[in-house]
Length: 309
Ligand SMILES: NC(=O)c1ccc[n+]([C@@H]2O[C@H](COP(=O)([O-])OP(=O)(O)OC[C@H]3O[C@@H](n4cnc5c(N)ncnc54)[C@H](O)[C@@H]3O)[C@@H](O)[C@H]2O)c1
Image (cartoon, rainbow, N blue to C red; front, side, top):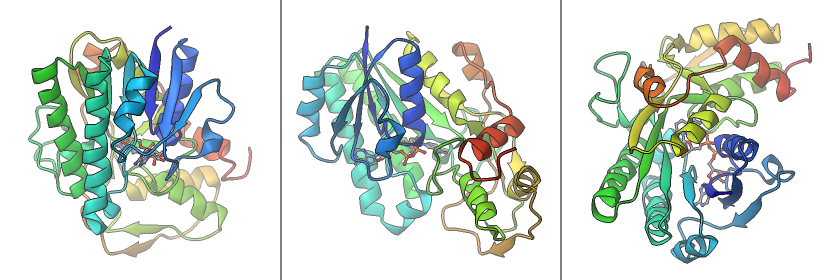
């Protein structure tokens, strides 16, 4: 049974990846500093938990001692706004921390490392939908650090033969999400319903996003582990919806009527985003299984954020 180390495995996406790996029969080790991840996300799972910070250089030896066959690297500073606010912290976790993990992957001779990248590497799209051939011109420190790690992975392959998979997620949503990450708007909207308050929308609300359900992202990671080739793929729904329309759908499901409060758009936010997933479906045994309607219902009901139906 292959051992998989999941960094950030106590987080929103990481914990779903862990569950998917266990279902497939992998042995799993989670490494997390629990800065945004939660122990309760993984506490009942038959896994090894290694509470460690990837920015600590000793992590390299710790990972080598764990001797994983694969690494799925999810740990990160995940907020675009925070990356603008504290550029050094973003660099420290997302670049230096990732380099520790990459160095450990080389020393441990892992079969493959997967990296959670982001639509933020593209910046403001010059054409839609965005394919992986699209220019990469990040508009935020977060996008830049993600792109930097992608480039280090390509060099690690060139110099050390480390196999990699780069998965560029669109906006991920689903159960266990909190409001801080990129797809966090759905979780924030659900909280507003629970608090019986109007939602806050930054900008006009006409900005569009491509939302992908978290279990589809977890499944893409598991399929990417089985790929022989190095890949750089979009993990997305290939559909987009405006934030105003999204609020319409969520408020319908939650059966509330609130007019949104509009505020100034946030630094680093891009206007429109939709990622093409055709190449992903051609290269991986994967396609999104959960449409937005069903995903929103599962998210709202599973988190008991709206009244149970
Ligand atoms: N949520 C999205 O929409 C989205 C979109 C694109 C990319 N991503 C990427 O996916 C990955 C997972 O994001 P998420 O949404 O699950 O966020 P999350 O905050 O739930 O998960 C991040 C995890 O990393 C851990 N972590 C953070 N810093 C660490 C450190 N220094 N050492 C060890 N562990 C650390 C956190 O405790 C947490 O468990 C991240 O790399 C993120 O950038 C997320």
